Length: 588
Image (cartoon, rainbow, N blue to C red):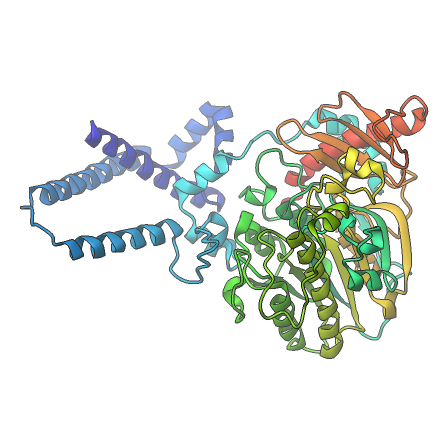
């Protein structure tokens, strides 16, 4: 029976490889879940195969290959089992067992270099895209594993009927210049704007993603312990956004939306884990003539984020834990401070006459909240557990991690000034999500009771010499960052995603940001403005409207505000379902 299973497994695997060769020769892509669509027209697909390929010869070759491999394995089995047993001494058993364990471990990882033993990330399909070249990547993919990875991702894409029903309101929201409800066109072009930054050289852009930092942890947003003096000071010199939201919580989902402009509204895995989605259009590519860099202290293969970065951003230089000279301090790689220092050295070495677009992803404000030994004099606070819990932190360690992140931001600004690129750089500092704090008494009750604290994060756009200062009271979303920066830097772009330049008037009136408030197969979705939140089930049922300034925010105020209720109900459902469609429509 066991030999029978072996032969069946060999037959299946060799057939997958044969089909993979044909699939690549025909379509130029490796075998994946999209092949299942040919079963919908099985007769036509069968006839095409029969008329195009020597099916009988291929079948004969397949059977001969299975027979040859099966025979070789069975012969190896007999040779091994018929060999006379030899007794082994104790040390041979110990060393042999250790060798087998190490070999098995490395075999499971699929790599022998750049190992972070605290976070041993195995080879994944995304590692095949290390070069950004799709043909090189095709050589590195295992067809059986790649087919499995793509099959296990939900094939439930979006509700096209709902997209069509809400097309008019969503197209108006996005400012589509040539609406086409039949083609579901959401593309629009933004030319160079008169409010662009006036400078001798094109300004640099530097995104700094602040791990697990929500507004409730920042002094400028009301935290009573003032744990973030550097960010608080920067807020007085920046564009300070009082109502900024990420569409969905989770680091990989924030990276996705910040690069693509499409909220990651997938319901099982993150979109970065979907092999067929990771080659996306991004406005970053409209920054013509810019050096493009992405820097992360740990392994960029986590959640397959490296596939999105390399496949979507043209000519990007991706740096992760294998590229740094600094020591790894924990599971997340090198410290944020060392990441800033090494990133600074890279930026200083760039040609002075060429602008850069740099994305720096921090990770220190995350369990295990490591305080590195080499920290440039950072001092741990002696606040008590009761004090930090009263201000929204779960532990003293978490509180100090926020303080350390803020300290490192201060050092980043010092490095940029010393490096000579501070004056001509637009720094975009934003949280990737909040830490889902349960008690935040210093915030409005709506944030805790309606679950908004997870999505509500700080945003500062800092370039005092180029932009001046401004307080932005409107609700702004993560997807708006790239269009806004393109407008500031004078970059024309065409986009078919959710992001909008916030310096453009909002066609819907008071700005609305789409949210996912509860993830999963049956998500709770929302549309938030400066004053209201509308929430509903994913299918549009049970919509309720909530006043964010109310001391009793759980009250449904739809009857008191019927026009706002109808406006937000239509947009919330439409924006969510359209976002699901854009995940696929934005693939390039």
